[in-house]
Image 1: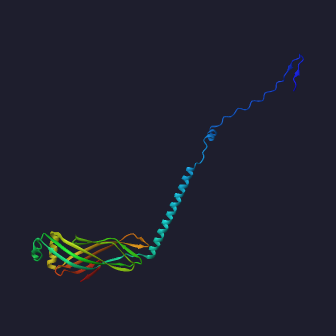
Image 2 (image 1 turned 135 degrees about the horizontal axis):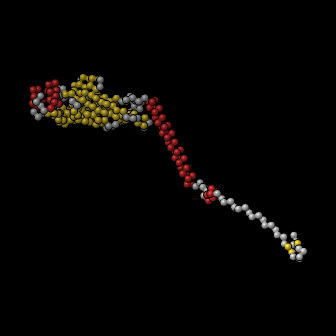
Length: 254
């Protein structure tokens, strides 16, 4: 618009209004400021850690399932086989030597001196023949077996038999030799031994043994079972032979 001329000859410029000031900037909130400058971006390490934990969990579940499956198969096989306890019996006793000695040599001959005997020593060598019977459809694995010969509750000597494997439905002979070298007996036990040997021509002994066995199915061994041997035997010192044997409830007189 051209400037207007006033009557006095002066020009008056019309003032244009100033545009309104812009609205003041609102301060950004602390949340937006923090969000703009501290945004979280997932890292590769945390992602890899989560994947690793997931793989470990899957592997654990897989191995647990396989172990349970194998256990179930073994249990089914055992139930189908119906394992039975093996039989371990003493069949023969061979007396190779038996001798009794006392400080007074006449004690073993004269019955009147047996009461006065305060000590005696027993020497003995016997050969034991056992039969191991396996009535099962699968094999049996035996561990080391140990046998002890006793007189009136006193251990005299021991013998051991190495472990072995026995096939299904089979019978196997197991031999052991117990050697006793001058086992000392005192007082009442010595007097009883001398009296039994000199008057009755009989010495009663006891053979004890523990045999450990495991049923084997497909290279898996069952929990161990214990087979006990408990036999009473009577030996004649004069004849150097066995006169009586009893194991469990079965007695056999020779």
